[in-house]
Image (tube, rainbow, N blue to C red; front, side, top):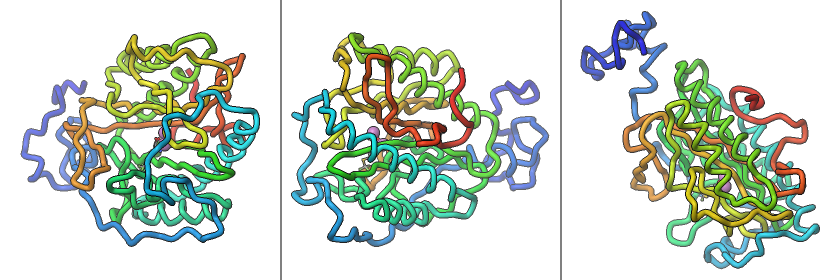
Length: 337
Ligand code: MF3
Ligand code: CO
Ligand code: CO
């Protein structure tokens, strides 16, 4: 709390603040260098036409038949499926790394989508989000979620701005299996609270995965995440969950990122699922944009997210989407507690 302006409320209407005014929070910084980015809502841009994937690349079944996920896929995978998931997961991690490297002020999320699309194809895979979903299929190859957008943002013509935070969620389908991973980046120089949000969210993902242990209920994961987030004054988004994954994009089990006693699937060696906590500075409730996909916080405050696909082993989690160099993508380096 800044005592020169407790609660950091604007003393002049926000619409009247000019970029070079002194920020209302009492930091002494210019408004444009301090709270401007966190007080403006993200507005939808223009979505570019659909991009094609070469015929030679194998498509997930939902692209071919327009159906949805098959919830009957076995939660425990064969060694053959696991081998393929290791390769696809590592390739997804490399794509996430490369698309993340292109983030800069002025770059549009559509440009990041083109890069992700082309990298998936160059890797011999299909970008799983493209045409996913039965009623109004997702129209792009990556999810890009800026500031108060929690998840499933559709890449468009909006240029990233200095002070934004952006999550990129890459899923690759190759060798008949999906690898799903995401990370959050700072764009240029961001305010200290957003930096802390990203750091705590990354630790939440790490703590959640550290709770993976055969014989234990998956609710241990949500308990660990919720405890860490709330101890830092943040909240856990409830409506979007981790999921089983393999030959299907989204299948059993559901992984809640908060504690619920009925989230009681017992973890077994060979089970694969994602852990992907979305952590909010303010309210965890969301509102969907008119596009039917983009989920934003009701209060306009920011969220961050990190995601890995993992397999349960005797020793704990094996991260299938860890980059081959062992490092995490996104801002803030590797999680250290
Ligand atoms: N990758 C997202 C997840 O973590 C799902 C995106 S579905 C899409 O589960 F259709 F929005 F791409
Ligand atoms: Co996922
Ligand atoms: Co994802």
